[in-house]
Structure formats: structure tokens, C-alpha cells
Length: 195
Image 1 (cartoon, rainbow, N blue to C red):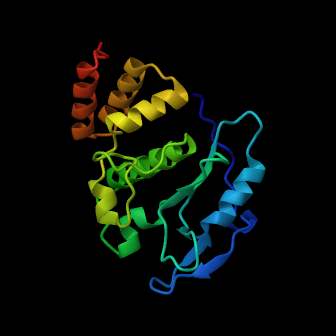
Image 2 (image 1 turned 90 degrees about the horizontal axis):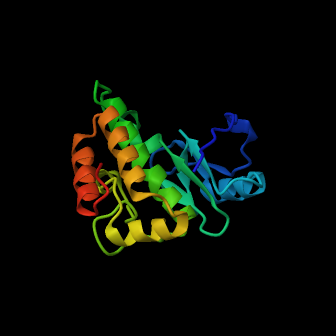
């Protein structure tokens, strides 16, 4: 599947309700407004569209925040890096920050994309499609899909398992995710997809 990066959109161009979070006092956008806007912007030749922002999100007035949100039917989603970066909690930024933020972003991006492919929250195994409610839970979530959700993704996309595992192993290797690389190589071997 080809991925196309669209031009950056300035804050003022996003027609989303803005509030100040009552706990953090930081700006938040209403994620459902963004989903509606993305639905109207979705190109005719696109399967899905996902927006990425550094602004915190909330899905409803009764919620404190949401890491990301996607629509099954409209094939659009949005996620925020805001709470994934150590600066959110005023933690120090060091040499491991880039890898930490990349890993967190990869998890939520693939999770929200899973929703756009029709996969609901997983209740079967430890899985990237499991729901998360706080950062510690997100950090403990694996990057990989469980066998049930992997089958659902295959049904939606019809990918070549060997090519998928090869691409994942390469991404993990190039970005220093040794544990994930080991896992995907073992999983590829288990299904006979290893080259």
C-alpha cells in the first residue's frame, strides 16, 4: 500500500473546537471535529487518511484526553504526539528520547490505522490493538498484532506475510528496536515466512 505525505496544515486551518485542559492547562483540540474535517478532505483515491499533531486531543467534554481516535466507517483518524514526548511531563530529554517517541508514535499510528481497517480493540492477547488509558499502559503494549488481529488485518489488506515481516524486521533493526526485531523474526519463522 502506497503512503503519501500531504502538506502540513497550520493550526488556524483546522476547524476544531479548542479548550484548555482543566488539569494540564494546555490547549486541546476536539478530536471528533478533526475526524469530521478529515472525512471532507479524504481524497477519492485514498483508502484512509490519518492526521498527526503535537496538540493534545480530547474526544468529548467529559474526557480528560485521548491519545488518538479513528473512524471505522469514514476511514479517517488523528493522533497526537503531545503526551508521548517526555517534555509533556517535564522529564529530561536525552539520547534515548528520539527512539522512545518513535516507538510510542509507531504504536499509536498502527493502532489507529488498524481501526481504519475495521479492527476493534483486542481483548484476546497482549496486542497493539488493545485499548490504552494512560502512558504506562501504552508503553507496555507491544508493537505487534496478536494472531487474531493479524488475521483480521490480512483479511482487510491481503498482504504477503513474508514481505510484511521482512519490512518490519528492517524497520526495527534500522531504529534500534532489538526486542521487536527478535519477536518478528521468530514469528516469521513460526509461520514459514522467514527467508
